[in-house]
Amino acid sequence: MTDAFAYAPISQLVGLEVVPADPQDALAPTVVALEVDQRMHNPMGFVHGGVIALLADAAMGIAFGRTLDDQMSFATVEMKTSFLRPIKRSRLTATATLVQRGLRIGFVQCEIIDSRGKLVATSSCTCTVNSLS
Image (cartoon, rainbow, N blue to C red; front, side, top):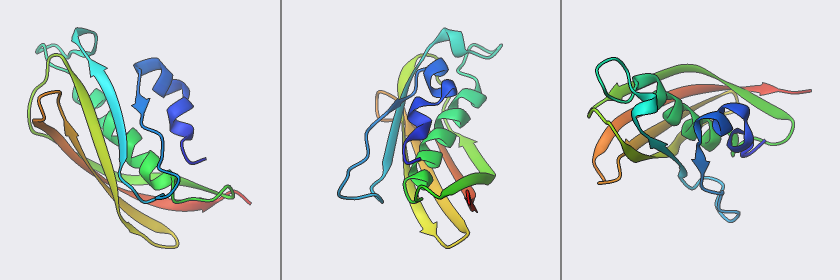
């Protein structure tokens, strides 16, 4: 379950690149990258906000998923993304950090930067833990 998103069909479709987990630190920040270009543009000529939100969602989902055991699943129950800078073409890098993990609820934050190190977006989500048994 830990990095299932790295191999999910949506990840393959859009080209998400997931940095492998540190086996010594399951709570280390999660890093996911994505090359964006004109194929992902909205009518105004910039990368669609949904693509940026997808990148944030993937990074935060993996960060939260890394805290679960094989008998658990989770669902995102709330997500907020703030778009700070328009992008046309770049390699975007999302870094997600677990803020709080309780028995049933968790909170994750994410920052997305472009290839120049400029902050493009911030995001946060609340996740709920589900038992598979």
